[in-house]
Every structure is written in structure tokens, then in C-alpha cells.
Amino acid sequence: MTMNPSYKPPCLALENVQCDNRLQDISFTVRSGQCVHVVGENGAGKTTLLLAMAGLLNNGTEGQIKLNNVDLRQYSLAQLATSRCFLSQQVSCQFDLTVAEILHFYTEVARIPAEIEDALELSPLLAQSLLQLSGGEQQRVHIARCLLQIWPAIQRGEGVLLLDEPLQSLDVAHQQCLLQLLSRLVAQGNVVVMSCHDVNTSYHHASHVALLLNGQMIASGQSKSVLTPNNLKTTLKCDFHLIYSENAYEFLLPVVNKP
Amino acid sequence: MLRRRSVSSPRILLLLGGAIGVTTLAIFAAVGSDIDDASLRQHVFLQLTLPLVINAMLVGFALSASAACLQVLLNNPLADPGIIGISSGASLMAALVLLTGIAGQLAYLNYVLPLACFMGALFSTLLIYRVAQRMPASPVAVILAGIAISTVCGAIIAWLYYFADAQALRNLTFWLMGSLHQADAALLVVAVPLISAALIYILSNLSHLNRLYLGTDAARAAGTNVSTLNKRLLLACAIAVGGAVSLAGSIAFVGLLVPHLLRLLLGYNNRLIVPAAGLCGSLLMLLIALASESWAVTTLPVSMLTATIGGPLFILVLMRGQFRLSA
Image 1 (cartoon, rainbow over the protein chains, first blue to last red):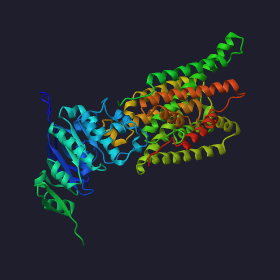
Image 2 (cartoon, each protein chain N blue to C red):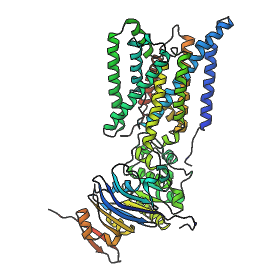
Image 3 (cartoon, rainbow over the protein chains, first blue to last red):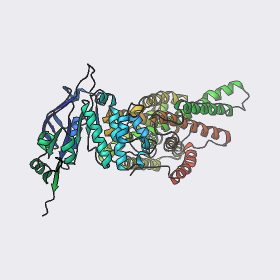
């Protein structure tokens, strides 16, 4: 982590946040150096929660969300864009832009930093049209776009990364590279909040987990204490067995209940 | 690494500026060159040639730059002011002024006509925007809303045709087909400041426009206040297009063809594409004016020429598969 005396450890606090019927009375705090995974079934409110935390839900939101102890509504979108990024699940483009053009338009950096290049391998894609890329390649571009948008803040350890299902469409190798990159960024003091459908990834890579069910947070805390078979059955409506392998590796095995 | 560009922006803009200068001089040389009387030549220059050149430059710039801006703003590469109905709104208001007999009673027609066109363009833009917002989010929504508004405007103009007298019909028909000669100094005095102000606003927001390529959510996440930007840029485009229609009537295809061809050549950076599209539009209009002045026995309707050149060229581009739309 940077030792700059002006370093402001990022902190995101939600107090009784409600949004129409999609979020109900959500309260929790994400502190510097935490990687929080939001887990829940489809339509549980994960995307809405991330949008609210990003300051991108203006209408119908009640309660208070504070970034670094200041109400999110006090920030302009331009101010927020310097310290927090938001990866949307669905990004569509109607124009035949190249990857280089997209990164140029949405970020201020002139070159892709080595850390991002190592994890996401963008160089071979730069001259290609976004529309011609596979889903996984497009996802790598959008992840890089988000990281580069707040790269100066990330380097200072002051970045807030809000990622809606960043692992979707990625192959296993790139999933692991991305998770390692996020772990390094979190170790520098940055905050990561991401939604994830793979409970084993959350079990091993998240420092904290928030479980959402029908817009309500039914449990939150350190990942291994929250991701219990009981909590998962309530949240995901699926039985899980916690398996201990011979080399002391733990994983959650979903059990299919046949009718 | 990320700012690669095969042709530098200042170089291409200078090149276009130079071509505009040469074409302008060619028009100055072509019009009135056979007049011996110096005072008459000066009169022709001030009353005919200069308004023609200013009109051509302004109309071409306004239509092409507005279309380039609208295509990104509405997230639709087909968003030509003519196709999505903005020009039809302006034309309808012009038709109302010219056909209902109001024109004959107005001492200040030169001021009323551009204002009516602005209002028509603005009203149809807002209507298209509102209708499209109520439809399922899709780039096709704007086109469909535009077609609907154009149809309604076309129907009202047809009814006005039905009841109008022969002379008014002839005036409107020629006006709607487009002419660079119908604007005089008085009309330019009103239209030039309004169009210029709108274009300056568009040109000063091009970096924000670059962030709209991936949609509203991505732009907001990147720090752009999209709702304010959308409203102001739509207003600016409506003013520019309304002004262009008031100066030269309805001109087809320029807005669709010029930005699209430029994107194929220069990429998608609006900081280059929008001013370059404007300059290309000006150049195209000046070339049409030059052709009209040099070769035609009578003044040719501009829209007829732009559609004659632009239509086949666009079909060629489509058939070569260079026009891509995502699913």
C-alpha cells in the first residue's frame, strides 16, 4: 500500500438502503482492503445493490450510502468516476469501434499498465473490432476499461471497484488471472465489491460475503462464516455439502435434489 | 499505444479547409465573371455569390455535424435528421408558413421562416425522443419513432398541398426539394448566429460524446451527466438542423453518408469525426453549388443532386459489407 500521508483508505457504508421493491433495508460497511462478494439467486437484487453503491440509481433510493464518510449524493458523477468504477453485466455497442478506441475514449491512460496486461492480455485485441470479439474477450476489454478509468486511484490504494459478475464468459485461466489481480489490488488497500454465482470462488477469494434474497440481506460477514450450507440453502434454494479434501482444501459441493 | 491514428487530426482538418477554400474561390470565379460592369459585378457578388457560399458552407456543416452527433447521441448509426424525422418537423412548419397564406401577411417572413423551422425541428426531436423512451430500449426505437413522426408530418403537408393554390404549391415543392439560392442576406442574419451557436455547443462537447458509444450506463459510470448532455445536444442539433432547413429546404442523405464514410476512413473519435463531417458537408454543398452554377442551365434542386449521388454510393457501401450494425 502507498505510504503517502494524504492516503485516504476507501470506505463504503450503506445505512438502511431501500430501492422500490428491489432492495429492502440494506445496511453494511465495506472497508479498505476488503473484497466483498454479493451472492444470491437471479433477481435477488445484486445488480441493483451494486448500482446503488456506484451512485447510479437516482430514483426511488432511500437511506444513505456514504463514500469516505460523505453522502454519495454530494458527489458529482465526474467526481465519483475518478475513484469508483462500475462494470455492467450488459454492455452493447452499435458502432464498429476497435478495442483501442474504446479504451482511449473511456480512460485517461496512454498505455495499458503491465499488471492489467498480464492478467487480461489485451495487446492482441487492441486493433480488433469489439463487435468481432468473443463474449469472454469483450468481457476482458470491459474489465480493463473499468480498471483503467480509476487507475490513478487504484495505484494510490483508494479505488472502489464495483463489478457485476466480472467472471461471466471468462475462461478458467482468465478467471484465475483476474481473481489474482483483484487480490493484489485489495492488498494495496482498494475495495472490491462484486457479484458472483460460483460459491467456491467466493469461499476462497472473498474476504467478506453478503447474501441477498429477494432484495434483503440475510447474512453478511467473513466469507467462511457466512457461506454455510444452511445459509446457502436459504439463499440459493439448493443443498450444499462442505467437503474437506485430503490436502485440507475445502469446497462447497451443490447437491441436486431430484423430485 | 491507445491513441494511435493513421492520419493526424489537424492534417485532415487542414486538408478539408484547403479544399473548401479552393472550391469557394472557384465559385467566386464562376459566378458573375462574364459581367463587365464593376458595380454590377460587386452587386452580384454581395447579393448572390456571397450568400450562396455562406449558405452552402453553413447548411453542409450543420447537417453533417448534427447527424454525426445525433448518431452517437441516439446510439443509432442511421440517425440522419432526414430519416429520423427532424427535418420533417421543420419542413411541416415551413409548409404551414408558406402554404396557409400567413406568409403574405407577414412583413418579417425572413425572421418567421427560420424560427418556424427551429420550432418544428425542436418539437419533432422532443417528440421522437419521448416516443422512443417509452419503447423497449433499442436503437431501432428511434428510427421507428422517427418514421412515425415523419409519416404524420408528411400527412399534414399532403393535406396542406390539397388545399393550397397553384403558386403556393410550386413554391413549396421547390423549397422542399432544397435550394441554396433561397436564402438572402436578411435570412442569413437570423440563421447564422443561431446555427453557429448550436454548432459551437456541439463541438465543445465532443469528448463527452465519445463516452456514449457503449450506452448510457457506461457513460454515467465514466462520469458523464447523460440526461443533461442528451437534452442540450438534442436541442443544439434541432436548432442546427432547423436552421439548415430554413436556409436550404430539406436535403437528403448528406447527414447519413458523410459521417459514415468518414468513420470508415478515420475511425470513431468524435473530436475528429464531427468537425471533419461538418467540413466535408460544407465541401459537398459547395461542390454542388459550383456544379449548379457552372453547368446547369437552371438552378438544380440540391436534394435531387445529393440523393442522386448519395443513394447509389450508400448502396455500394452496404453491398460491400462495410456498414455493420450489432444485433
